[in-house]
Length: 161
Image (cartoon, rainbow, N blue to C red; front, side, top):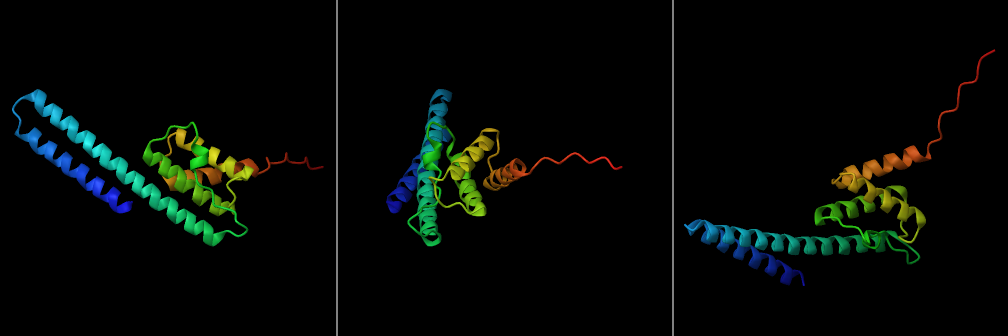
């Protein structure tokens, strides 16, 4: 399947290049714009295929790592079950997935059905909705928020007599 995706990506890029060349050769602005629009669409399709391929690679790697780390048949926390009814662009979804894996590893969470894993996923998605897009930033912000949530507020000072 990966070879097929790579071939599809190459085909899309070739079609995009053909459209760009045809656009450059056009004197009619309407036709030129049509070719440029088609070029953009081919490039977006290639990007979509590339994302699909990278996501598959990431999922395979995460599964292998989870199988190595986990015992008792528990699986690592993939992001897919937590993304239901949420709309993220492919790059943000990938960043959220990476951040979830990093954060779960840092917190020692390996069971995706665990309530704490669900809480971590929700927090990371909330941070992504606030505009964080980098997986390391998402991870660090989530850890920071969990640390601040678990710390007790300072006790008032006792008056000295």
